[in-house]
Length: 365
Image (cartoon, rainbow, N blue to C red):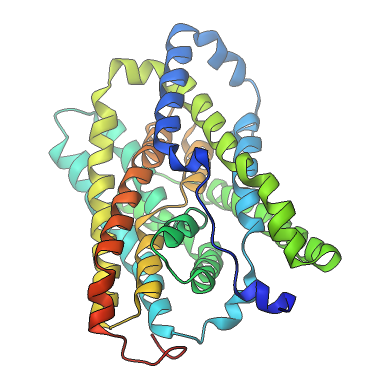
């Protein structure tokens, strides 16, 4: 099989030990970071000294370590396949960019500013809304390969969906977030937002693209996928967990004083996840899209690029902000929620197959 063929048919990704129990590790990191932050505030004071342009240097390094391995996995040559099975691509792009950010804003405003008004201050409500909006404007780019694998999704087409969404994110993330936060009364400096996207999306994306292209040209796609990429497998998870510990060191006192807030933040995020999956998956059902295309189309919108959301929340509002806390809670709830959606997708596969796709194999799904 040629290298080009292999690039179009990437191997399915298996969940690592850390990925399988990610919720447990996240919970342990929250406990560890909160304990350190509450009992040893000097640690937070020491870390806060290393900042540049409102960005924490230790956090920036950890976030690059999270995002760069993900960008290595994206073969943007797959964008050439956007003409295949166009309906699946329509579902994921419309849901991700014309529906998801706005429903997230609606849920966040309703709960934080209205329903939970007796429990949180207006300032915290704005911060939590900001963190939720950042999550809602960033569709998943990495873990979706895991969810797609678990639901027997088409890995090559999942790659197409992710690549297209990444390209859209480069131009749509900043305007959408700025619009929604402006509506919510949260001031957002465009220069800081643009800098965050450059630092945490454009730079690792470009670095990943040229690293991938150079190594495949020299060593071949088989060596790249089977020998090089696996070395980065633990890097993303370890960097994520280290980032969480660091963030919660700064959040320690807030959490100890307000433990209820974790649950309050999780409620609208949970409702948003199920709603977006229902819209995308239900739309795919209505259009008779094949299940291997429909499942990942639902997963991409339901899950989030939480690494980017955490990075931008920290850059815009600071490590101790409610926005950063809300983005991190998104990490905590995402894994169990997405596993439940994988279960739903697997349970309904037979119904999709009985209904049948309108188009023949390889055509418009």
